[in-house]
Length: 116
Image (tube, rainbow, N blue to C red; front, side, top):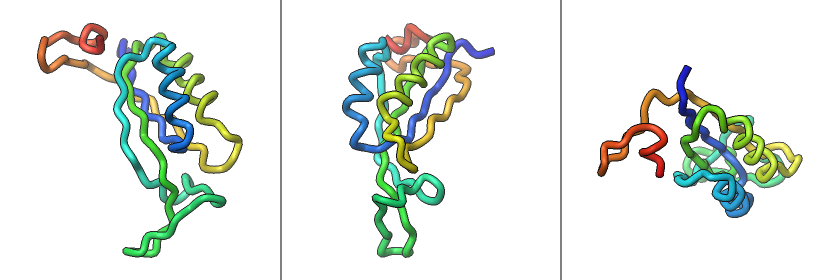
């Protein structure tokens, strides 16, 4: 079993600032953010846009990614759920994956040391 996990939270953009503060207060030191378009089941029926290029319906979201120790995963996922949940369809999803190694490019440190 991997001692590190990658957490990807695809959430409403308006929730991200408070979510990042809560995660930082819980000891997460590095985040990666991306703007994304949720298409299909992740679309908020009350707040969507239509692509002029292909006519598809989408909702703008933010992908928050971070790596953590495996024993912290459940607590950190609950923080994501607490701060990203509005109770409306389209609140997002959390994806958790095993990580085999994390390596700091500058120092060569591995796993938890690489995340400092």
